Image 1: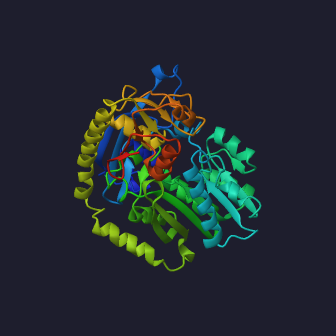
Image 2: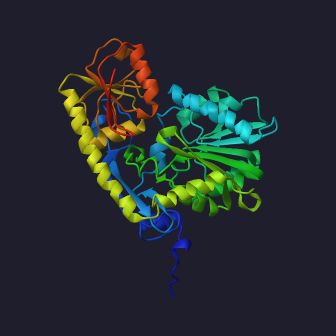
Image 3: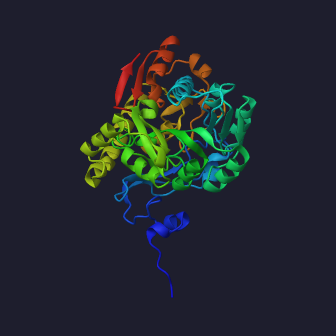
Length: 423
């Protein structure tokens, strides 16, 4: 006789195959909006690769059972991450943020010379380099072999793997458990996220702390900032949804705050549920604010789709009007910028080129739209009529940089609200 499994008993692969919620298995995941077919936002191309470029459906949905906002379609993580072009060290603002995180972790989590520290998704080792010589063990794990080489060159021991519960078992045998585990913008990027948090549970020592950051759905997607939606961002968390996820791995949120990083993020500290201290007041305040904003209400989230469509039309119109006044240059080539360009149809006929500090992106073409990426030295020698600020989350730094170069003209800024700044 055939045995009927509940959704809780299904494997992750079975849930995905049936189109269920990736975490709780609920069947009623509802689409909030679609951006159509979009290429991988960090797959910057050579001219030769352009004809073979592949795009994938990019649509966001909501599970009403566990409040988790998630992609409807995903891309194999091996394709996304094993050769990765985003560098933590490429933007001064990001480096400064990671330095502040290092100070906060050391102070708030009471790091000592004996502390054992692990970073999941350690990229090129920029954060972990701050801990060298200050802890008993500093270890990174990251699947991108090109970035692991850079991290090791900094003197940071790094293992080139995707972290899973199985891999965590092997790491625990080799290295033991860790007093502090850090995951910055990695939980939301991991398709089988329940397996990831169970791996973190396995590697976290008694009395240890898990420190994480992730884009905050209330201030990004719900606020109309759809540029956080791309294939690497499988999830966008509310604190309610994050609590439920961590609880499935017997981890409990002890502290939380909303920070301005990456267009607004959640910063959370979690510990083993059986030994967690009293929850800090900030957690309750965030949860209450989410209830007041109707995050569990489908009607609230359904309105997001209409707002996205309106933004796309309005911003494309603004860029087209500016282009009629003369050549435009894009500022920054972050993932969010690639989403904006593709969603709004802003192609190489509108932007002459894009400038970015990431050497791995320079000399290549922007995914989907195919305008070239150059260093800022190219812009220093030219005088375009205006600019489109794609790295809008570093607005102040970017505008100051233009002024230091003596540039004039309008700067079109997409978020957090559309505006035009005159230099």
